[in-house]
Each structure stands twice: as C-alpha cells, then as structure tokens.
Length: 110
Length: 112
Picture (cartoon, chains in turn brown, blue):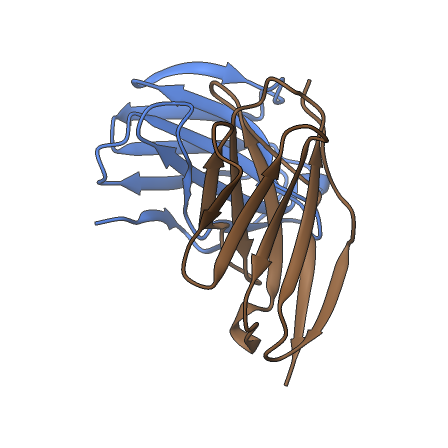
C-alpha cells in the first residue's frame, strides 16, 4: 500500500519568511498529489494539486514541486502570514482512496 | 455551492445511545466519503460511496453503519459506540472517485 511520510512534524517561521514543507511517498506509480491545510476544528481545505506529468505548479503564494526520481514533493508558501498557521497534509490520490501523510504543523510568529 | 455541510458540529453520546451524523453536498459530486480523525493524526478512511453504492469499507466495526439515501446525502449511523470512538468525523465528496476531495468541517464526537 501507499506510505506517505513527512520529514518534519513542526515548522516554526517568522511572518514574511518563506516556508517549505516536505513530503515523501513510496509508490512510484502514484500520479496525483494534493496538499491540504487543516485549521483547528475544521476539515482539511484543498490548497493545490499536481499530477505526475508536471514538476511544478504555482498558485497564489503557494508552489508545489514534485520530484518523481526520489519520490518527494514539497509545498512552498511565500511571505508566510499568521493566517497560514495550520497543519499541512500531503496526500496521494489513488483510484478511490486518498492516503494522507502524517502532517506538519506550521507555526507563524509575528 | 462549493460546500460540504455536516451536522451536527458537536455530539456527545453515551455508549448505549443511537445517533446519526449527516452530510450534504450540492456540487453534483458522485463519490462521498467518511473519514475518522483522531487528534494530531491524519484522517483515516472509513467508507466510500460511488454513485450511491458502497464501494469501500475499510474494515470498520459494525457499530458504524453508513447510508447514502441519494447522491447529495450521506449519513453515518452510530450505535453502541466505545469511548475510543471519540474523534472528529469528516465527510468528503469528489466529482467521481479518484478526483480531489472536498471536506466538510466535521462532527466532533465524544463518547462517554
């Protein structure tokens, strides 16, 4: 089965810094990856996704990078704001199932 | 409407109670899901409905009983739960199965 891990349980940054959250996956056949943000007491919120035919995808202040060679993806948040404080999950989408990584808590201090 | 709506937001129940969690979406999505999430853990898949038929049951105990009355509604019937079943229960939907999931805000369940 799919195994999805994250390298760091907690990431503390200063407001205005760029944040990078990393994720590793195990199944080289995986072809659809999603980043979710979960604030306390809320459900996961879609941030950005990427398919395996791409290496990079950009959204508003967020960029996802996919390295299929080493089975690694990352989420970059530019100019991190206090409102970005949350738990971030990478997830690998299978046919009917979404496998979540363990999550990284992003703490943004003013 | 791009929301998945879950009710109630909070639920406290005893081990002998019967209760139901409800989920609704009006995005025309054809797959709906129940996830369970314990504190500081990722969501864990419980059930998947695809085109109103149960397609995945992740070996969930029978005290949890899902129901999909129509393509917009998903229920989770609870009976004789245990304290360890206390968790955040999340509903999600996707256009078909295999596309990105949209989550509701969840029901925080406490079993006493």
